[in-house]
View (cartoon, one colour):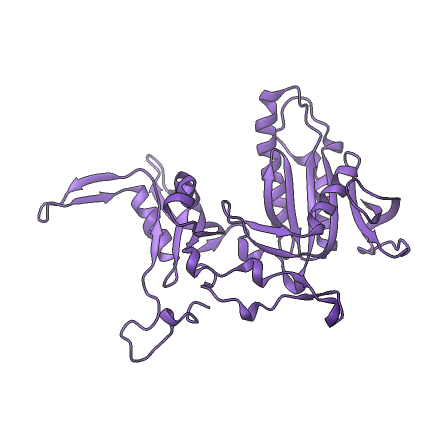
Length: 357
């Protein structure tokens, strides 16, 4: 952890005993005045409160900032900031304020929530890509693959933030145990592409709906990335991904706020594949978990092959294996839809369609 590096070890003979400096950064509006005695500029206001709240979330030796601040400077990261490692820490409740209601009793509570990013200097960063996933084994040693040995990787690691409440998943919540993961792609296809004015607000409504569904699972599903209504998600097991996909489809009629012509029953195409991954770590710009390996392309191909409104599971058939239907419990009906070689893939896939009974 943070006390393993030589400069951070806990030495009783040293006065400070490990990392103690904490950095909380925020770029936002403030008010200023000149101090009566020192003549220095004194800052106050919402921006200062947020920065102070972020600093209180830090552990010793940690640098945290809000996502708005990071977006303002991320373009300079490579040239001026030394390409620091960025880790997404999720959205957190920073603090609450209560304002008396004028003319009536009671108070109005306002919550200040921010998405938090962790910055680590590149020379001190823990290499997650080298520590997580599976690697090939030489034919001389039996071939196949083995789980990477994280004990050989050094760098600064920090515990979860000292937060009042974590509201969304963070990079630390992304699944990676035993070098396996379930990758799920969700493609939005039920919107009218000809109505460009309605597409943007509709996608915002659907994004909120999808993220809320992810958080209802235990453990929650993880959002890796989103691009114009296409999501890449990660789950700890295939059954959770299937349950999420079916819930996403079955509850779409309850979503309010969609405008224009929409096809609710055929809104999404959901493709799911489970298996080993080669490596994973924080994306260099977003700080969210980024997975590498054949599993990512396979899941994307399964999703593309789906019919609108369909939730499909893809299982590779190597060496002439038979297509065995997976069991996801009594509430989910699974049937073999087709066996085919998907575009760009060299192995046959058994595609199973999943429905709610």
